[in-house]
Length: 160
Ligand SMILES: Nc1ncnc2c1ncn2[C@@H]1O[C@H](COP(=O)(O)OP(=O)(O)OP(=O)(O)O)[C@@H](O)[C@H]1O
Ligand SMILES: [Mg+2]
Image (cartoon, rainbow, N blue to C red; front, side, top):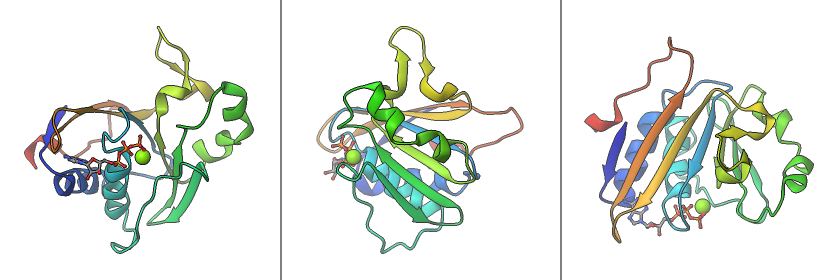
């Protein structure tokens, strides 16, 4: 599923729509360059997860993991500053990933255990991958890839 966003506001809207259909235990992996809109999109997801609209989501670049409480616990993780897999293991992510919250990870490419095969650390299988491409100053292309049980239906974000 692909979707073009023409503004940060539209990105929030797309995120909100997806966020409202997330369930406890979901893992969202965000890919895309600096400034692609990963944090902006996360803010939308959080609104969809019923976090207070005035709550400002910051990139957890220094804290690495931020926790919010929406209708489920929300863990927002940014791996940008992580240099190697040992550092990732030291974060204790497995306790977060396979718990009853929604986990959103920026710079998820750092979880790839090998660059050729898409194998993720911690044996992450079920997930929603979101790849964001910068098209222009205000345009972003979102590509959604879902690896979820077939019974799950997500909103058709292309209709927004
Ligand atoms: N269509 C769009 N969707 C999202 N952001 C947009 C869009 N157009 C412009 N922008 C701008 O792009 C920037 C995206 O910033 P954001 O912090 O969300 O990126 P990021 O991918 O999290 O970056 P980083 O890798 O540094 O964490 C914001 O300044 C936002 O205003
Ligand atoms: Mg960010």
